[in-house]
Length: 376
Image (tube, rainbow, N blue to C red; front, side):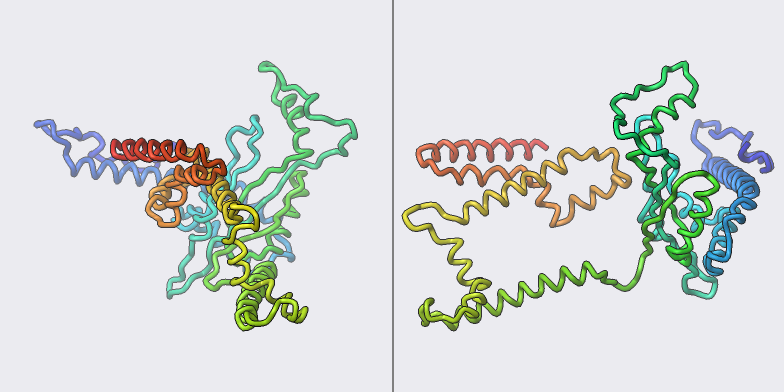
């Protein structure tokens, strides 16, 4: 039991309140210190017992395929756990635990991504020994080949009085389609190849197919992957084409379009001047503005974005206190004022005879919301 190895203090028997009924702060402080020390010692005992039983088995998974630096950092991690150091407990806390609601199909627990990456082990003489590294884990049992006529709809759950083995046998068929998705926090000195070598040994021991597709570590410098470079290059090319096309278009104003070369015509297609004029001008023989179609599309996107946040269950957020930060950010005002996204449709109607009705409805809508916000 936690705290059995902590000596009893007389403060635990001293009444918490004095004769006047007021709480004695000194006695309260001593009791809190004793409870904290009791919990710390109990946690040490628990972790030491777990490490003592697991360490020999963990050492079996270590071979020459794992780098010396990774092995050394892992040993420091285990030592930090047995000493209940804050950095080690933070890494352990950021690692996934068995997901609640497993029998309801919950097979994912991603752990604490940000907490893992923000954890650091400082050196005594300054600097950082290593950081936390978040590794995504995908695991599932080794499954037999799936029959061509297999269907999960044909399965039924075990009864309440059946053994758990029957339910596992029935529900285990879902792993033909699903995987356990977890996250582990390990020292950043362990490379992706090191972690893949470790889980390869573990896979054989637990008879499961375990993969680590990617590991993430917090880096000071910004690194660009090939896909980032490709996207930036394409956008930069389009921007340069727009600028260059606008310049060519401006200097070709006095030249008839038919006399322009094919190359100039292609370049002018990217001109911001010509495209802007085409967007704002009305079509020949029609009073319709093409720009209104763009406003409709943007308004619909705004509505969808707002409804996406409306249906979020904020009680399930890992860090719900961050919502306060969101509400005070300028870019989040688009979401907070998403109720305004329906207003453009009042003025985008093509039938003029009903436009007066929509103007009146809009005024009523604004007055109603102003009253609601005033009451709030």
